[in-house]
Image 1 (tube, rainbow, N blue to C red):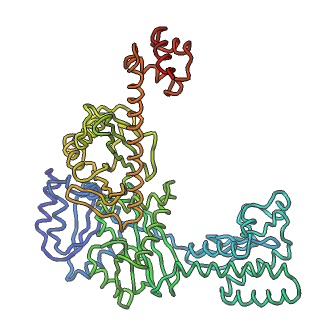
Image 2 (spheres, one colour):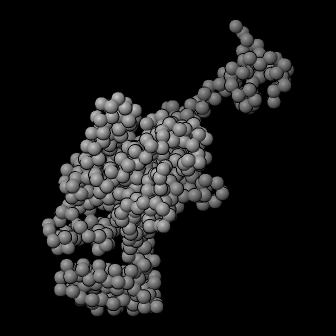
Length: 608
């Protein structure tokens, strides 16, 4: 232990075993972390242990910059929590979770007539457009723009009217009933203006009033034999009803509740909050923050604190995607802040779990977009990391499988999934040296050879270590390979993929038992896909080797043809069918052949 840690440890040991808040400071006296503790002496002292490698990465990085700390004693844990919130808001410490609050005013912009259209805007502008708002939710504004364009069949493209009228054919949106196609002259200026007026009525007066007025006008148009206007109004009413049904599907049995879910990548994480009011989804917020490899329970506690210090209107029910630290304390704090009883819910089934999964999918999609990745894969990787207890989603997964027939032509396949999708250029095949039917020894050999190539730094895909290794098999394969990882000094998470009687993924095998995946839909699907892919890759290589051996066996039965000539013929002609179809002259000119050998092959293959 260096002198700095020894000095800080000594100061920590002098602290009392009472609740309080501590402020870690760097060499410039800046507060870089604020935390709370039930017993200050134990908590603060744990940072300055001689075994710094046992601390999490983020904590270790923070401790390396600490030159001093201050503490503030409190009488109760509740006071401690309130003080912690206040000090974090005041100092904005680098190593605390900080959510950037970008809630501003948002507007609905309606461009000038005659070809008006609707857009989301972040500020007012003197451009002749009409602005509706302000609104505090960008999500609501975007949802409203999307809804009115689909319901009232307004253009969703970037074309400018009247400049682009008649210059192109209608796009797909017109043919599926989502656009009136002014670009192709399919609607008059007067009819288009009527659609815009209906859209404004829908936004200003609400769905029920707008629908009642449109039904009245549809009836009047039908009586006047104006069937085109009646049909247009009928289609808009139908689209409005479909939107209403969709909102009910996304709705909640509880009038007011917030749903939280976090998805993590290696460096970034995303918090999504879905807010329900009057049983309908009213807002969706996303926050990107650094993934500091923090304990998930502690992370959720901090996220709830940060979010509800920024937001008013705490609902009676808050649904979470997992357990959190200080649950009772948080419940009491939220209830006092809301002025009513607030409950924290960790769902295991039913509607609440469905909402959590939807929230996680939204977080994954938002995080994936910010990183240029696929949202579905991001959600599956985050769920897999949570199931396996990994600090972050495994960006690179390697999977291995052994294939042989009674110990003959024993081979192995290695597949790589990067960001949840196959990376086929990184796939590798292994011939098992010594053969045999001992799958455990074969798996040990393959991993030893793979890691030896990493140590050699061959410059290919073997020079990159995976974040997770999956073996096709149970605890036996895991136990066979773990000593290899320890021998190479590589702490790579290692698990087995357990199959049921139908060769489908059933569970994950760990060193101490099995982990069920059936309740984790996204992770279950991803692991099943990986297992199927590695099995397909290994068995296809085995079949290739077995077929080649069989062909070799056929050729080596011919007088004058040994294994070398048989291999040479197969390399040259590719298949046995092409060897049979070859003329005597073609066989004579093949590499490694002479006239006698060619004649022997030709006669042997043309006996019939």
